[in-house]
Image (cartoon, rainbow, N blue to C red):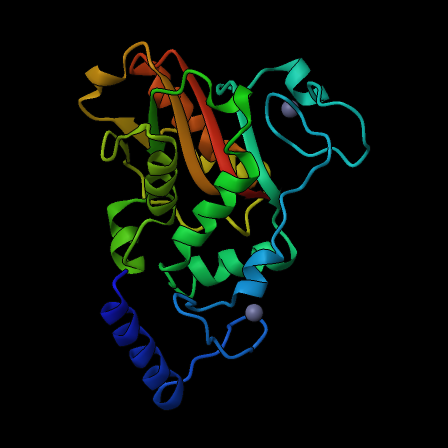
Length: 246
Ligand SMILES: [Zn+2]
Ligand SMILES: [Zn+2]
């Protein structure tokens, strides 16, 4: 940045601090650094990826330590996707940031959350090798219109940029507008989401390894249904990454 642009930038930041001070939505500290929006740098830096052992298929974190292995559920029946990984548990500050992002509609947090995901899982070779296309879990158009953005799309777009991988939007679509799943039992969620996704003009997906991106993994029903639709369209393998798991 040139010195003139720097000076203008600091002057406008100075004016903003005096006339329109804004505070971190999590810790209420004054946002005084350039580029700080909605939450402060300290709060961002306090997010850490969970480092415990996990299932190498469904990505569930294990309570006990040890090396990653296939969990009992996946031993019985492998999911329709090959690998899923989350950055952390859906709790504490990570949950708070996701809630601000999704429900208070601070879409600007998407970039920071994608940076966190990249820092947490960007070097996991098992997850990334051979991935040719990144696809966000779609929202139903009606829901997207109400929220104003698709939280998974912003994350997917940023991750695609970080990794230099093609992003494909509007190929995987949500054809069923189902109510928010949060209060439902696992079996209900599974039933609800069945047939909720379809692929449109999927020729370019044939034979590809695809990485799905979503914000929160609860029962895995959504990722499973998306994987089934993508594989029906000819995808070779589907993997998934989420910010957090419940
Ligand atoms: Zn803060
Ligand atoms: Zn598993």
